Amino acid sequence: MKNSTSTVWRSVAAPYLLGSDGTLLRNGVVRFAADGTVLGVESCDRIDSLPQTEYHNGILIPGMTNAHCHLELSCFRGAIPAQVGMVEFIRNVVSRRDDFSREEQEARAIEEDLSMWREGIQAVGDISNDTTSFPAKIRARAEGRTRYHTFAEFFGMPADDEAEAFYRRSVDPVVAAAERAGLPVTPTQHSTYFMSDRLFKLAADSPLMSIHFMETPAEVEFFDRKGGIFELVSAAGGREPDFLAYGGHAERLIGSLPREAHLILIHNTQMRRQDMELILDYFEDVTFVLCPRSNYYIDADFPPAQMLYEAGARVALGTDSLSSNTSLSMVEEMKWLCGHNPSLPLAAVLQWATLNGAQALRLGDEIGSFEPGKHPGAILLTGVDFDAMRLREDAKAVRLL
Image 1 (tube, rainbow, N blue to C red):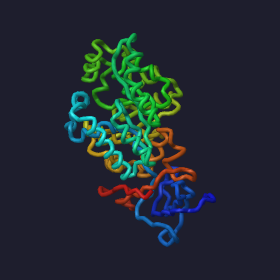
Image 2: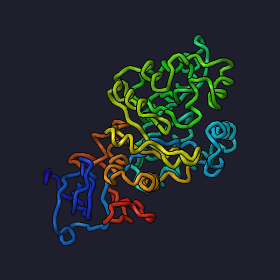
Image 3: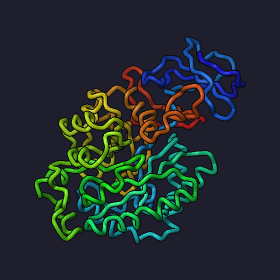
Image 4: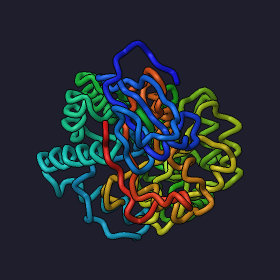
């Protein structure tokens, strides 16, 4: 067992503990200093009789990372019908954002931030088109709770000579407000379809990007000049999109972004194996984030979890927003994913929900695993079928630290 000279403040044990290597350690014990720093991890045959050690029945995991969220849309719970398809979903979000006052939006974001913390979420990759989620993030930071990385998202179809001014209007207010508040922030493109060519490339040097990618069947035919998304984008720009020569969504990424880009691709439900291989062969640092309940809510669709697992890709999990989900619960995402992908090992899914998401947000040196020197929090997963090593329907997360 690795240990430091710091005094042990709290020692926590469970039948299983998620190790830093992504395996489940039998009879695991983790020791913390008073400030939440991990001092050491070990395995012991009689954990229920260790002195000065809390024993909990479940799986002990570090705090989870919700790698994709839109906290600013927290007022939208139940506002948009399920399975209306992406085009109608987009129209609803755009047309109904003014249905809620700023005070309502800020209050709901604060409520959902607290709920995520209580349910074991340690960090969030959050999309922001405005600053209504910032009071929640500032409060979380002041109270030493959830870590946020804000993605200042932009989209549109401006002409080349208008692209830079359009970009500055879209991004600068959000970035400036985040920087004043001390919140980590980077610009990001919305997607590979709702961005004119020059506008997309203006953020190619962003230190970290989070891009919606091949989320819906309506995107599949886009580069063949077909489908509802193509019609929507063409109408928004008043002309045919100027990036069709790339020939595909993966090809557009590779033709527009540098190999060394730190890239997070969100949803990926329509991504084919050849797209995945093209992306993995080109980019040095890419994470595929799955938001399975959101995909089902919008399009009754399923992400390619097994394909990504077999490829050894870095996968993380997210909840998306309450406009396309019933809660911002990572445990519910894991239960849904495991229930629809019975061949996925539970340990792999737990790693997706913890360390992989932290690494995607470039927080892997601080949270995401029980390793000496980190401050990952401690979460107990209850409702586990230990014989089958599956999460039961009553599984939930309890924050211990």
